[in-house]
Image (cartoon, rainbow, N blue to C red; front, top):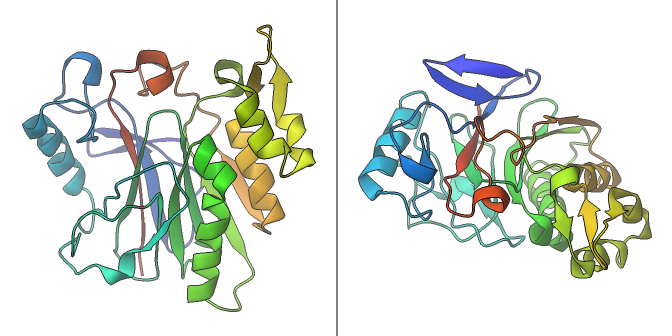
Length: 256
């Protein structure tokens, strides 16, 4: 579902009570070259002042400063309620997921093929976001995020998830190490891999693997964007496609 927030193209899912969330696209910013045009990644090789301009434009449509993370393809979850009202508090946390129970505390992750996943209690009281590449997904970043949310909101049994734009199975060739990381721990994951025409290679369904793990973790409602970052070069950055490229951001916050 595409939205237009003051001339800024974004992608989101079905409306959630008490939660706003969306993923930016590569459109609507001031970056040039391989980062054109709405690059939000300060680590991607783009000019720092241009990234700052893009982030300022993003900030103008948000209720607060985003809590940015230093993502390392891991499974660490940051409690964003530990930061001050100004945004980052003691610096940029090293984590690949964040949670909050506070209103207008804006969570943020960046992607360019990996999965952006938004998680929330159905009643809108608790919210989390996760960056899930195959390493983080296999390491349990989604389960860790849910565990952190459940520890902050004990007794809540109803959860929902949105899996945003990411690389699709037809474009995501992986080796036996990726296959083994999932299927070795859970044989039921094998259905999300198709043998490829190169020896020892597979096509991995990353969104499908995420949905599979979320269902096992008792998330009752899961929506997939069905948007492929690799195939839609006009809309999305893709590291697998371009290597030198920008980053989208997925933002989410509780409204009250």
